[in-house]
Length: 336
Image (cartoon, rainbow, N blue to C red; front, side):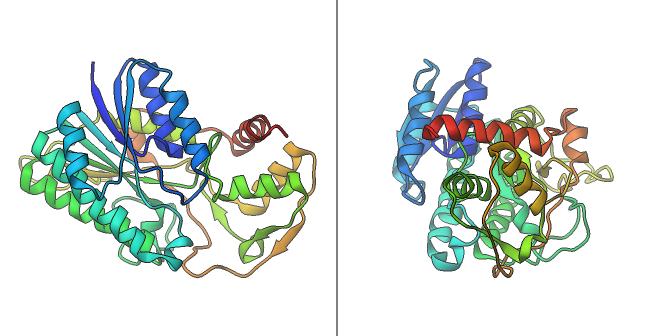
């Protein structure tokens, strides 16, 4: 049985990944700081659900606490580490940039050190579509340059990509970085658009719509994302012997390292997304149109061909179907 250490299991994606792996028979240990960036009660509920499985155990601690993380990793002895924990939120990085350096850079360094020392079979780590920054050619492709990040959040994520490449090269540590595209679904984060829009529409309070709704996102349903991660666990990158890499593959010519987009490959207009929530709730939104936020981008759109090539899988849940599932969960969770 593969033993998987997941950071961020009380978080949105980590919870869903742990649940999927446990259902498949994996042994999972979660590590989460339970920070109060958003409702800790929601995080606790996620962990309580996971703890109903005999295959799950967890530790509460910050990734910056290297001694604690090392002890947990040594005792659990994972075959695979999936690093999802991070200080999230593009807009919050404008207010508190140091939190992103501590959690995303120092915390990730500690994870990489443990993976190197334990010689894990595969280290997988979350990046973000935000690293594409000011790139305008879409759909975004892993093989194109991504050097124009627009927020500290995106910059810290790009830094971890570079750090992990160095580790892969120096220590022959197999690393896969995955870039997420606007993940949504049940048990989602309260600071994300779908949660805030649904809450506002059901409560009859105004919702803020940036760039007057002229924004496009590649909305990726969380269970699709998790399926992509699960399949990538088995797609272990191997250092090319002669440095030759197939066209369209982001595999490094000098390291067992690769970056992979996980997205729905379909850009959706924000106003269409809002209309799907209105249709599902049976209520019209009170719309507060606003200008673009600093650091935001007008569109994201993934090229997911590499994921398909490596795993045979491509996310495909239509956004209206995903919205319906979220609204049903929201009503149930909040008793609406």
